Length: 164
Image (tube, rainbow, N blue to C red):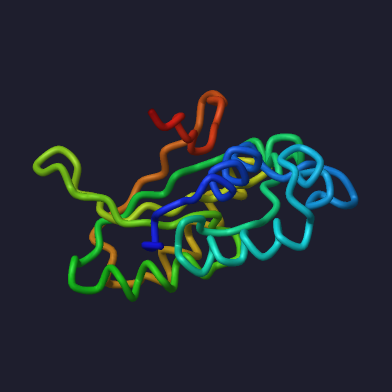
């Protein structure tokens, strides 16, 4: 089977977990009852899908708004392209950065190529964290901004379509 190929059991498993694992003490057992696969096979198939790169991770995704983190800023940085992998890895490793990634510049309007999401309870807290990123990036930063969220958009995961 190729890295991205899914058999019928894998497809059922991916569809059953696309919105997340059930919030129960035994989530794999709950999946077992939905797709008719014992929990040991659920765990083994998920491990295999992770190893093949079909799924990226299995983990909790807390609702940061419900936890009081209402100031959410996407910090955007103009850093040298030949240093972005190293700088991005350092910024992404900071405990207060939830995700960090490279995006293409859109010159002359948009010079930024490194994006790092920072959550805080207040804008002041976010600004303090962004200042920490600025200190870390140092002279490699040719400029940055913080784009604050103004509303919550519904997030959804990947959806498998039925095969013909």
